[in-house]
Image 1 (cartoon, rainbow, N blue to C red):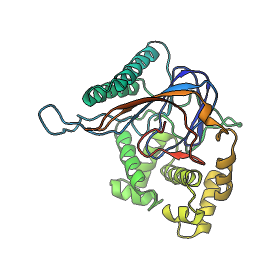
Image 2: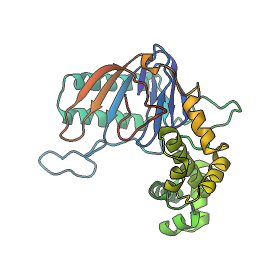
Image 3: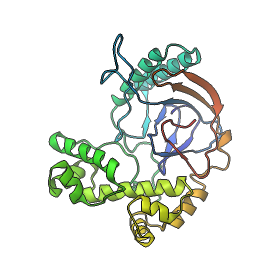
Image 4: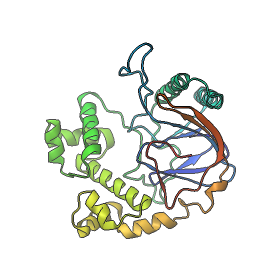
Amino acid sequence: MLVTKGHGTHEVDFEMFQCRPGTLVWARPGQLVRPGGQPGLDATLVCWTPSPWPARGGAANEGDGVPDLPDGGPTHRQLAGEDEDAVINEVSQLVVDCERELSPELLRQQLATLLLRIRLLGPQPTEGHVPDPDGALPADGPRGPWPVEGHEDDTFARFHADLEAGYARSRRVEEYADRLGCCVRTLTRASLAATGRSAKQVIDDRVTLQAKRLLAGTDLPVAEIGRRLGFPEPTNFGRFFQREAGHSPGAFRAWAATSPTSHPADPINAGAAEAAEVPPQGGEPTAARAGVPAPRPPLDPVTGFVQA
């Protein structure tokens, strides 16, 4: 999402970000998003499904597809100067060509160029974040990667991928270390270098975040959410969530549904959003102007598209 006019906020995975002209905000599959609902806040939304397309005269090759932004990258970026001009030009041209229903291959090439330009901006993990009253940053929010080097960088990347696939089955650092072929000390050192948190804390943060998503974005019973996250006994899940989040599951669900700072009363009047949707291989491009819709209570899960 590229903000083009107005001032306000946008929430991604329970973090609120300040938005003004030149603000970039992006959500990834599985995250929860909620617009701030401020009148006059206009934005362009670019929605796409990462997928390869075939090289000319042949089958799809690795590297031919539209690249996605890295999972560990920042959620918010405030553009300025030449960077802002370049991204605005790329997005504006993409919207125009979507409206003209030009070649899907051209649109995917334009999107690939836009995403590469954004990746080259580098991380800006904290600017624009609305701080908690005590000044602390959330422990489980989407933040930009901390600089790491060499072997520890690779170790954490493999750990992160394994954690995404297995956090609902195991919270034991030893099991992840065994699968990665390293010792617990090495995994902890890599986690500290990449995030400032131990491997055990990274695991618990991921489980807590998924619990928050399910509590806020679904009507599943608390016991079922616990079972999905590897807690056969609801009391064990409740103790874990209370320890990690500082609230009981029921209290967090109630807060997420009623919090005035993150659940606007009338987001449908938040302003116009210009949307450009880049199709997967073989699809047709679409573009439209529409008001930012009210989220389905209490939140909308992002399952492939940033929902506009």
